[in-house]
Length: 407
Picture 1 (cartoon, helix red, strand yellow):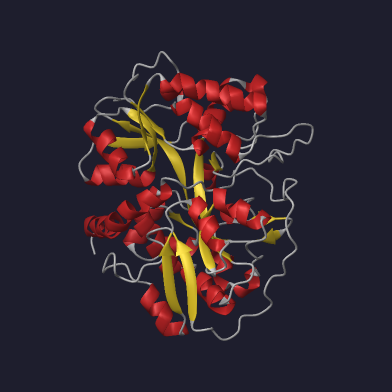
Picture 2 (cartoon, helix red, strand yellow):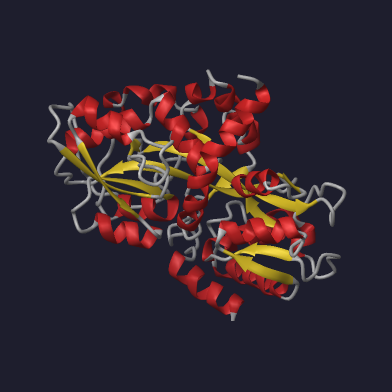
């Protein structure tokens, strides 16, 4: 297969499910913060034992997941990794597509689902709430091949225990239309400062978690605020972030939470630049849009998802079998390419030209790149930056603040 044909195959495979995945990712918040220590940050975690062995499958496994993660060929005939799993294990997969992280938390708390593909604003709540169990990584052979930068992060590891198996990750990059922005920007400044020459043509992400993007910019431009983690904001720091967001509101042309809308806006020039995902850039370029992206000097926020098992999973053996299967190089590559993210398994970046090209595009094994990316995580009162002399603001406060920003 030639390089061009390989690239075309990659695009054909990615496009259908990337579109579906966009609506799911729009309201998620994946957790982490590359520099965050996995010590618990003062978060109380119920003492739930991990499994000690994987026995015979129970005959089924119930999974709540983002669109594009658990595919049986129904959505896209070229995307089917569920059928092989069912044949190999005898575990029939019952999938529920989650629309938001809040919905996923609610569904897991019903006890009807064994496995969830949790984003950061769901995973931390599930762990602290005793809704998911620690993972015995010895029972997940493919865990050993996962990229080191995804192991031991706060979104799936607390008090030395792993509660999830990473699926993939991505950065919230600065997208720009090269017809309107001919020189690649190296800073987020043009999206925040009131004198931006692109006022009225700036795209911003429509979610309370976007407050972290403002905090990230303040970390670089107003160090006296003392922000060291964009997800650990005391009331003064949150107020400063909200002030910056309100300032941006005056120059923003649009807010987006639909990736297809973002593709259209940045490709057509309705928007000149703004926050986006690499998959949006890819889709725009595939349609001939004059779109590029950079990781600015201030760094960026980002997202990562993990497989987690219910604390009292009715089909625990099948759950473990699914997670290991989905973490294999072949399946993890398929999920990542359909969803539009960097795969977690390093071996998913080997073999075919499509695998290699995809991993290069998404910086899959480039830890230097991800050192500058703060993975989405749920803000909680126990400051994730380690401070104990103040109380940090929680996600409810961020949600209320975001409502004020949007008006």
